[in-house]
Image (tube, rainbow, N blue to C red; front, side):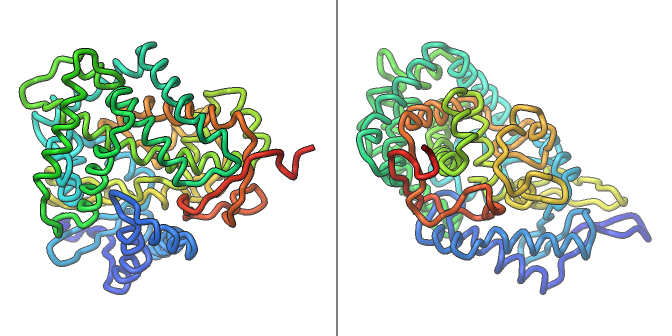
Amino acid sequence: MASGPSGSPGPARAGWTDIARMSFLGLLPTLAQGPVIRRPLAVRLAAALDTNAWGCRVLDGLRERHGPGPLLVTVPGRTVLVLLSADDARRVLAETDGSFTAANREKTAALSHFEPGGALITRGAARAARRRFNEAALGHGAAGPWFHEACRTAAREEALPLLTRDELTWKRFHGAYQRVVRRVVLGDTARADERITELRDKLRGDGNWFMLHRKRHRLRAELFDRTRRYLDLPEPGGLARAVRATPAAADVDPVAQTQHWFFAFDAAPIGAYLALGLLACHPEQEARARADETYLRACVLESQRLWPTTLGILRDTTTETRWPGGWSLPAGTAIVFPSSYFHRDARHIPYADRFEPEVWLDGRAEAEWSIAPFSRGPARCPGRDIVLLTSAAFLAELLRRDWHMASSLRLGPARPLPRTADHTSLRFTAGRRPDRP
């Protein structure tokens, strides 16, 4: 439990009514949509009700009543600190791998279904070694002209069939993007290996249930065996080539790290597809994105700010932590960074509910630690540049045609953008848009 010196106040504590509202309007919609892999029906329902807006209103109300300091939530078996201020968010993200760990208990329970050796859910010395390997291998890929060319080739070839159709749906977009992912991570020989994607997604579905679902060791072994085959090729392609070129300590397990990249990449098409939706409704930004790939990357980042694919960043305290006001938290306390709340905090961010890619080019977004689509600090995603390169290359190919919205979701500048978006129902038609001569 939280404590402070004699006579000093402790943190603000959520009452049972507060906990019920946070659970019903914030936690349950998040769990229903799927924290590891999205459930399409739940995503549609959440978007129809705009459940992220509900959750943000609940947190706004708690902040008004209790102040901007973190809020302590106590439930059976777990003590959780919910962050409500940008200053506290910055501290937690900056001190990850010190006072806080990214290997949160709940996150570990979810991801251990398919990547028990991944750096993200590792602690101690092994975590440091695995993180160094990830940074070196991914940095080698991001900096390599050979990788950039392979990525652009994959994007061009997989986008081509979509350009021959006059309608673009999530299913078609996602299928093509997954072929790009297999080629980018494992090489061109993995292009048609839909079984490896199927195995990954089955195990991710198990991860949605955390520790409540049994571990399917046979499926995980098959997934890792398939991954290993691509790494062991005489001339591996994609990031597998960077893995082979990167020295690995005994406890790194390059297969496990590669598998994490394969998993983590799956959030990328959601952000890219929603970015396409935003561009279809913002002609000026679309014209600039066609001409400037750096700006197009900013559009992808802005999509992930508006609708973060990681709905909450989780940390656990590794030691007793002291907080302003003189109180402390014991080791093992969960910390929650509610992404949708921080990314859309209108009191702190003037552009909270509008599409403004420029903030990623002029330093405004980078200066805000409360905006963290790829996390921040020591646990910041080392594959950020590769994801942005891939998404921008794929969208650049698609923007060779003129797409306009054919579904009911409205993402134009006439009104504040919704807090919850259903990417699965987004649909486009190609051709000249009615608002263009």
